Image 1 (cartoon, rainbow, N blue to C red):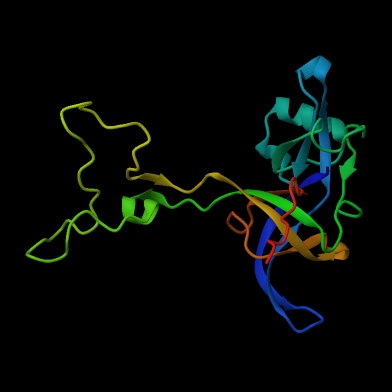
Image 2: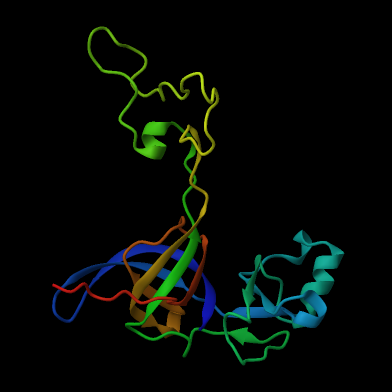
Length: 220
């Protein structure tokens, strides 16, 4: 199983050879530079720390500069980890090595995409949980159309149950979309086009990996 971090560029559309319209999401898969190799002996698990993007050295402290200078590949804007006990089994990495798109994925392959969903802020139960509203909208009811309504119960147990659907923070969560198809790969731009939409805002960090499970067509 392989995996790599990329940057969501945005959505567009394309047409297949058969003339079929397909909405796609463009993901820029620039090389992931290895800045640290973690092992079972030293860190308790196997992983590689990879960097994405670039930034000015003036924005880093001395400890960060010393750590990132070992790779001699500049200073990344973001650091992420890839578990090598789940991905790239049997492969060994060294500091400064690059994980590149070429040969990692193929056109038509199914992959899983992991990203952070759009943050919606504090929302009520109608937007967050698709509730219909607590009150009727007739007979003089006013200012209660979008309220949550009663959340309690009778004398026993006399409390609100845990996990009750309530207003609260919505979005900004890790979301995974499984078994989506790579429609096309543009190697000269380090770009892949994935069918449909994926979680996350434009310019957000996305993790793309080989599909864990493949969807099969339902029997007629």
